[in-house]
Length: 316
Image (cartoon, rainbow, N blue to C red):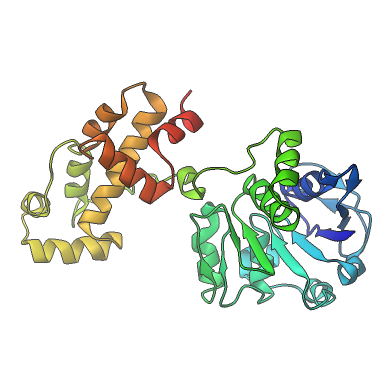
C-alpha cells in the first residue's frame, strides 16, 4: 500500500492538515484502501494549529524515512514564513526522506520546501496572498501564483487552502485513474476538477492615488473604463507626451498603460458579474471590453474561466 506521511509543523493550518487524510484515506479499489496515511510531528508530540486547537499525531519524524509520499501542509512556522530558512531540527527531519519519494506541499507549506531547497529551479505555487514574500525569499523558484497546483513530477505544490483538495485529487487521478478520483470527489462533495486557476480568487485592491505622477490619470481612467480610452487620451489627461507618460507609468505601476487598463476592465467585469444580473454583453460594454466575445477572451486569459463560470462561482 502507498504510504503517505503528513508532516505537521507548528503552528500548522488545521484545514490543510486534514486534506490529505480525507482525500487519500477515501481512495479505494474494490473496497480496499489504496493509501496508508499517517500524520507525524517532529517529536511525535502534540502540534498546535493556528486556529485554537491542537492535534495529536500518530508518529514522529522518523516516519518520513518509510514514506512513499510526504505532504507538508500550510504552516506559520516562524523560521520559514518570516525568514525563509529552517531550523536544524526541521532540516534533519527532511533529510530522512528517501531519494525518489514524492514530496507535496499545500498552501504555505511551499515555504518549507523552498527553504529546504527542494523547489530551486522548479515551477511551484503557494497562496496568492504570500506570493511576493515567497519570491523575495526564494528567487530561484519559478513561482506560478495563478495556478491551483503545479505538478513537477516528484515535487508538487498547491495554492491556498482548498487548492490542496485539487492537488490531492489530481494525485489520486495520476496514481489510479479518473474513476477512483471521481468517486473520492463525490464522497467529499467537491468537483473532481475545478475550472480555472487561483487568479479568479486573487483580491486586487486599487493602490492609493498619489497627487503627482500618473496617479490622477489612473483614477480618472478608472472612472471612465466604459469609454474607448487610448494611450493618447491617457497621456493628454496627464499633460505629458506619450513617450514620457508611458515611461513614468511603467516606473510607477510596473506595467504598461495598456496592460493596466485591461486588468482594470477585467476587475470591473468581475465586480459586475459578482454583484449584478446584467447580461454578459452589457457587462462587457460597461467594463470597456466591448462585446461578449472580448470579455470571454480577456477573462479567460487573466482568470482562466468563462464569464458564466465566474458568475456561478461568485454571484449571490
